[in-house]
Length: 383
Ligand SMILES: *Cc1c(COP(=O)(O)O)cnc(C)c1O
Image (cartoon, rainbow, N blue to C red; front, side, top):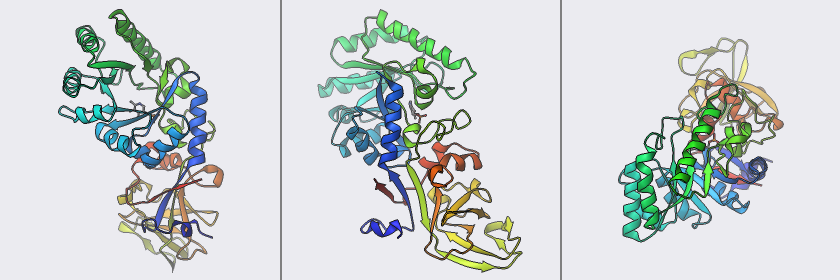
C-alpha cells in the first residue's frame, strides 16, 4: 500500500517530503550527548533547513531543548507566535529599522553585532519598558557579522551602561567558525583563542555573560574545545553531515530526517536513439521504458542533477536521464507504471541516495539540497 493514501485532507501535490520525528529525535540525542553540560540551541532557520520549522521547533521543545535559533528576525517573530512563545528563541540577523519593539514584546533574544543595532535595541527597550535579552556577536574570523575585537574597547562602555540601566541583559557572547570542517587547519584554534580573548575583555569590563557559544555542527562534532556553555547545531539534527569528506552522516550514526518522494505521472516505451528532454543531452542507447517524475528545478531539484543522480523505484536504482526541467524530469523506469512511487533521496540504510549524495553529484552541499526544496512540496510529519 502506498503511504499517500494516509494523506487525505493534505494539500494535493504529486510529491511529498516525509519528515521523520524519530530520526530527528535520534540526531538531537546525539547532539545532546556530544554537548555534555553545554546547552543545545537547535538551529531551525530557513524553515528548519526545509523540513518545516514549526513542527521541528515543537519536536525540539518536546524533547527538552530550551533554545531555538533562526536567522532573520522576521522568521523569529512568525515562529515565536506559532510556537506560543515556548522556550527561548534567538534571532541572528536584523537590519536597521527592524521591528525590535515587537521582538521584545514576543520575548525574542536578539543578536547584537553592530553599534547601530545596540542603540536601536536599547531605544526599543527604553520605549517598551522591556529589558532586551541580547547575545553579543564578535567577529573572530568570518568577516560576516559581529564586533571586531579591535572595536570592542570603544563599544564595551556602552554595553555596560545599557546593562546598568536595565535596558539590556547580556545573555550570550557568540561567534561563528569559518573552517570547522577543515581538520588540518589552525583556523579553528585561532578563532577559539580570539573568542576566549573577547570573553576576557567582557569580564574585565565587569559585564556578566551567561552563555558562550561558538560551535555549530562542525565544531560540536570535531572540535570539543569549541563547545563552551552552549552549542548551535543545525545540519546534524537533520541527519546530514556538515562535511561528508570529513565524516559521512552514516559514519557518525546520524539518520536523515527527510525523504523526498514523488508519484510517476507517466511512462513510455521508446526505441533506441530517442533524444530525452531539453537539448537532447541524453539519447537512449537501447529500447527503454522512461518514466516522468513531477518535480523540477522550481521545486529545488538542482538542474545540475541532469544526467547524474539515481532515484529508486520499487527497490531498484534508476538513473535520471537528460535535463531536469522546471516541473519534471525523466528517469529510466523498466517495469514501472504511472502511479509508482519514486524516491529521490532519504536514508542510505533504506537503499536511497542521501541528500549528501545528491549534493556531491550536483557540486554543492547537503544543506542546499534540503533547504531549497520548494514550498509547494507538502511536508508530511511521520512517526
Ligand atoms: C546556520 C548556523 C548554525 C548552524 O550551522 P550547521 O552547520 O547547520 O550546524 C549555527 N550558527 C550560526 C550563526 C549559523 O548561521
